[in-house]
Each structure stands twice: as C-alpha cells, then as structure tokens.
Amino acid sequence: MVVANKYEMVCGLEVHVELQTKTKIFCGCTTEFGGEQNTHVCPVCLGMPGALPVLNREVVNYAIKAGLALNCEIAEFSKFDRKNYFYPDLSKNYQTSQFDLPICGKGGLEIEVDGEKKWIGITRAHMEEDAGKLVHSGETITTSNASSVDYNRAGVPLLEIVSEPDMRSIPEVLAYLEKLVQILEYTEVSDCRMEQGSVRFDINVSLRPIGSTDLGIRTETKNLNSFSSVRRCMEYEVARQARVLDAGEKVVQETRTWDEGQGVTLTLRSKEEAHDYRYFPEPDLAPLVIDREWVEGIRKTLPELPDARRARLQELGLSAYDAGVITQSKALSDYFDAALSHYGDAKTLANWVMGDVTRLLNSNQCGVVDSPISATQLAELLGLIEKGTISGKIAKSVLEEMYSTSKDASTIVKEKGLAQISDEGALLGIIDEVIAKNPQSVEDYRAGKDRAIGFLVGQIMKATKGQANPGLVNKLLKEKLA
Amino acid sequence: MLSISREDVEYVAALARLELTEQETQEYTEQLNSILGYAAMLERLDTNDVVPTAHAVPLHNVLREDQVRPSINHEKALRNAPDGEEGFFRVPKISLT
Image 1 (spheres, rainbow over the protein chains, first blue to last red):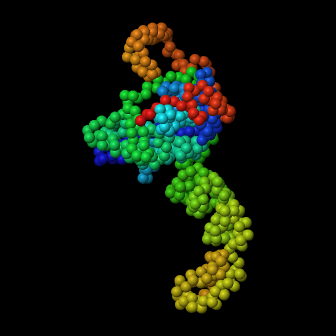
Image 2 (tube, helix red, strand yellow):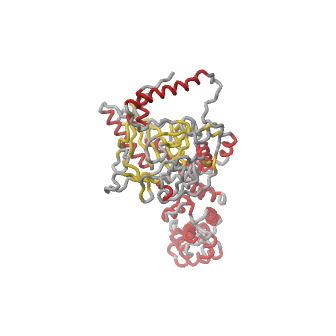
Image 3 (tube, rainbow over the protein chains, first blue to last red):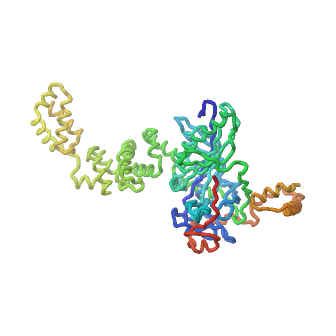
C-alpha cells in the first residue's frame, strides 16, 4: 500500500485470544462471562500472599492445538515468567506470562488479497493470564478520585499470538485477522466473541520511504476489539504518521490508544515512560516438558481447517466464492457437510444453504447451530425435489413450513397434499380441459407462436395449484398439440 | 564483573516506586555490589555442560484438571481490602491517558 505517494506501510500484530476453558489458567474459578463483580475470584486470582497457582492442563492443550493449526513449532520445554508492572488490573503487581520460552514458536498462515496469496509469519504464541476490569465511572465528589476494580476476568487464560511485521496494507491486515480468527474458531480453542472481548488486537505500524528496507519508527495501538475498529484506527494512524513525516518531523515511538468515539489515536505512554517489565522466571509454577506424543495426540483432534475445506468443496464443483461463503464459519460449514452426507449434489445444496436457509436464519436472527431445520431434514427436502415428488417452487414454501414447525419435509408434503402430480392420466384430464378453454392460444401455437405454449402451461399449473410436474406437463402438452 | 552504579539503584527504585534518601541510595549501592560480588564466585565454576535452570525444584508438568471449584464471596474477597464499595475493590484513580 502506498501512503501519500511516497511511503510504504509496515505492520505487525499482537492478538490476544481468550481460551474457552471452564476454569481460569491458575485456579478453579469459573471463566463464565458477566458474573456479579468479584464473585468469580479466589485467593489465587486475587493474588493473596501464600496462594499457589496450579496450571490448567486444558490451557496447555488449547495452546498446542492453536499452535498446530497456525503451523507453529511446539516447544519441548516451556516456562512461565513474571511481567512486573504497577497497575491495579492485576492485584499481584505482575502478570504471569511467558517471556523467553513460549509454548509456540515460529509459524504462519496464508492470506489472499485481490487474488494474490501471501504468507504472513507468526513469531510466537504464548500463554498468559487476562487482567481484571477497571471501572472509572462516577464523577461525584466521593468517587472522582477512585476507580472500582472487578477481578472476575483476572486469570482467564489468554493466548497471545505475535505476527512478524509482514503486512504491507490495511487489506492484508484485515485478511490476516479474519483468517486467524477463523482458524481459532475452527479449532474451538476460543468462542471468538469479539463483542465480549474474547479477541483483542494490538497494532504495530510504521511507515518508510518506498524502496527503503529499513524499518521506520513504529507506534503500538492497543486493545482494539473489532475488525472495523482496526480498519478505522489504521487509516487514521497511517495518515497521521504520513503527516508527521511530511512535516520533516520524526514519529515518536510510543504506545497509543484508539478513541472509538472521536475516531483518533491518542498517546497512552511514550518510550521515556515505557515499562521495564523486569521479567523473571515464575518460581510458583513448575516448567512444562511437552513430549511429542502429547503434541501428536492433539494433532489428531484438529478438525479439517478452512483452507482444506474450501479446496474440498471446490473439488465438488462449488465456485471459489461459494466455497468461501460456506466455510466462513465452522458452524455453517459443519451444517453443509452434515447435509452433504445425505444428499450428494453439492452445488444444489450450496444454493439452498446460501440462499433460502441463510435468509430464513438471518430474518429470524437465528444462528445456524440453532436452526429449526436440521441438516438431515434439509437433505431430505432436496431429495424430494430430485425424485420429482415436489417442484423447486413448492419446496421453498415447504422449507418455510419446516422452519416454523421443525417438521420433516415429507410429513408437510403429505399433510398439505403438496406432492407433485406426475400421474399422466390425471394430468391429461387437466390438459384437455385447458385446451378446450383456450382455443385461441392453441391456434396461435399451431400457427407457429411458440410463446403461446407458455400461457397454456401456466394455466395448467394454476389449475393444479402449482403441483403439476412442469417437465411432464410440457411433454404431454406438446404431444397433444402436435 | 558486573557492578551496580548509583544510577542503577535510582532506576530500580523508580521502577519499584521507592523513594530513597541520599544515604539509602549510597547504602543500597554498596550492599547490592557486595551481593553481586558474592554471586560472582559462580563464575569460577565450569558451567559449560550445565543446562540453564528454569526452576529451583526438579519438577515439571504440575497440572490441574479443568474443573470448576467454588469461588469466594464478595465479603471474603474484600475483607482485607483497604477500600471497597458494592462488591468492587476501590483503588486510587489511575488514568493512563
């Protein structure tokens, strides 16, 4: 991406993702979101003197799983460290994190922007604890000089995934984030609910003159929690840095914060006040030795990942676009696959899933996981069209009925008498009637006006309330008029 | 050998939010240098074949199953807190911006 005609953007990202364990990383408190303040706490996550943390096995399992899905090396030896800072979002005055021996080493993922594929490297991923929440509300005399702290979130397990500074445009950044979140969602290590803060992004960005290979001075903007904020924040920050450079000044290396309301980034702290975290090994936690058997056991639990699924669907005849839409979320992709195991025509299935099924779900604000129409039921409906029992048009109304009643397609077809009329005898009777009533059209057709047959077919469909088998009607009618 | 300067002591004190008197700064500089000198004895040993120690106790993989255990209530959580209100801890207001 060229900025202000003369700069190239360089960006690397840190992504914090909450792992969806039942309990916190070092204690048995629940990780459930939204409890009453300070009710999901205990001496360990409150940092009481003498309390001893014990690592949650599932956190390690999830970290390994995410690491494998992101093509990372999994360390054979890993340990925790204390990151020291004074801020009351953690009560211990340090965060238990990993410094020099993270659980996941180098990896990466492939993105695609405007048809061009690019590999984005991942430097590392490490386990750490989330911090509590500070509430700065209340500007009355009694509360104006104090903040309230809720430690329910303190100790919730996080995986921090650090990328290489490989991204050169905002679309590349967004493609990387979307792909990363998609992979994490597929592996089910996180619920990835961005609106609840399950995924948070820190953006490191700098500009350099086009052609230069040195890195410019960067800023880090912390704690964004949606793709749209990332896009807006980057647009602002890149333009700001370009203005600074254009004015012949230097970008100040600093940590910034994104103000969503004003749409600007602001200085949080400059390098002069930068933290010296004085990391040192956490003496309360034993190190981890991860044997290859453990890693291979977890590799076996990896689901088919988005790229592989997309490729498989394209092999089945879906367009790249359709395969992309279906595999966007694991839930939709699983639904598609479940239906596919009962109905073989992938293209027709994709049209229904992306069309009518998605429309019904969206208009009822229903997730595909909670769909009142099961994948098997959808497959049965499509099977009825294939067999000629109902027409595609009737199937659409059957689908609506299935949505509101959760009944099987065949049940609805039977109850409502919607089965297509494919009985030649019955159809011939109706055809004779229609011919008798419309002598003009018959004459037109015989005079060479092919369009007249369309009118006659329409009349037959009308007479049968749309239930006549259209192919058969066409055939029989043409025979009659010949 | 490494040595600790006055500036090092002042820097570490600032990080730890400690306000030291002139005399204390002097005293700690000497003490820290003495401690470092003592630890420097290790340099006389051949440690080429020794793996760096991550933990003092020869343990690894001390893990817990992912099972919820009861948390404590507001009252207990806040019992030792200098200030609290409506189930929240209250701390001096800190603004980062």
